Amino acid sequence: MLSGRARLLSLRFAALLLLLLARGSGAFLLPQTPPPPGHAALDLVPADRLLVLAPHPDDEVLGCGGLLQRAVSLHLPVEIAFLTYGDSNEGSFLAYRLHPVLEPSAVETMGEMRRREALAAAAVLGVPADRLSFLGYPDLGTLEIWQAHWGARPPGRGPLTRARAVPYPTALRPRAPYKGEEILADLEALLGRFRPTRICVSHPADRHPDHAALYLFTRVALWNLEGRVQATLYPYLVHFPGWPAPGYRPTVPEGAPPALGTAVAWQSFRLTPAEVEVKRRALMAHRSQWHSGAHRLLPFARATELTGDFPPLALPAGEGAAVSVTGEGGLRLRLTRSGDRLGVELPPIRRLSLFAFGYRRDRPFAGIPKIEVRMEARSLAVLDQGQVLKAPGVTVDRRADRLVLGLPLALLGDPERLLLAARPPFGKGPAVRLPWRVIELGSK
Image 1 (cartoon, rainbow, N blue to C red):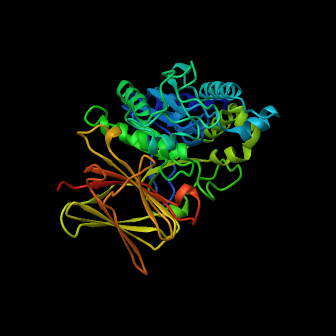
Image 2: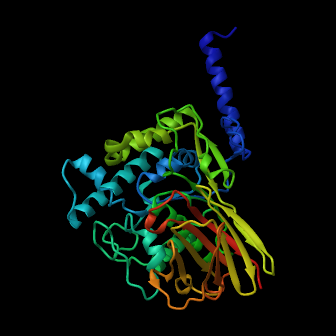
Image 3: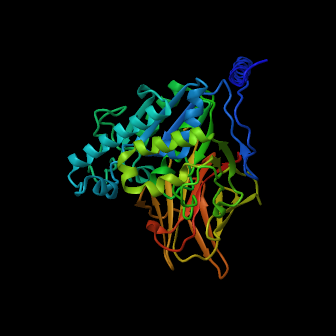
């Protein structure tokens, strides 16, 4: 008869043998906990190649720290790329260094410090340093590049570094100008070389401008690589009002923000208790951010990680074709097509900017108009990359219950797809907005 210790060893050996057999057959024996109601379960498979795109150092852990650990444990190819060095976080730097960080050279020093923190966090997660890339575009400046720095327009400028090109010698491509086509080129090079099957990227509804920008650049890069890179996007949310719930609750799954409703197809990835603890330690490795805001980071160390995207909406060709898009704060847009014009019906909001960026496979994205329709109480301006257009052909019908805009499709570059968003001008005004959405336009 076996002793208690022998029985325990025998059970452990049996469990290990079952695990090895399961891995050999392509199955992974991991805790199977049902996802929250309305969420699909996110699981990795042996053929996966995981790419995590992060706007700043620490976002990779906040959004995907558990998923990265799981991919490493399953010996899947993993890479992480950072859009910025996170060098415009003056508040955190002030709290961490106890003196202002104002000179461009000092700001770059803090950017390099955040790069080193990212390397330390990756080591905690088990990701080798040579699997990390840093693009070096301007923190708090990439959405401005998306909107207004393409083609003949001058490069953007870093808010604190004052640089107009990547200033970091450790970056993927030092001295790359702060232009939209340069960011696209870097992302396309990463995607084409690594050929991921799954891409975790920041969410289009994220309130931080760099987070929205990285999603948009990634979307266009994947469109440009159609037929060469087959990957699914898994956007993760970080900055959103009232979300996640505050506090450190490592055993509690995180629900989706109610304000986004059911428009997002959410997926939930379940972490083991050990993975939650490693994620917490990886967040601590981002020392400058942990020192000034552990209370903001800890709520992401939960029993689940949430990803999900807005499905594209189709607006077919033909008279009478229409599609409705619901945003936040009661904003609802109805899009129609009539001949060569796009109609946009929206509530009679006094101040709102509507962004409509077209895409065509047969034209470089840099050369397609980047249109903003800026509406005030009794005025309307149409801009392309921030420059006011004369006689753009946009019509406006102000009614008591709604506002109806008519936009020539030629003004938008006769697009096959449309990236659409709305928010108060300059980010100020009523809390109504439409996160960036993809509209598929049928052929005429």
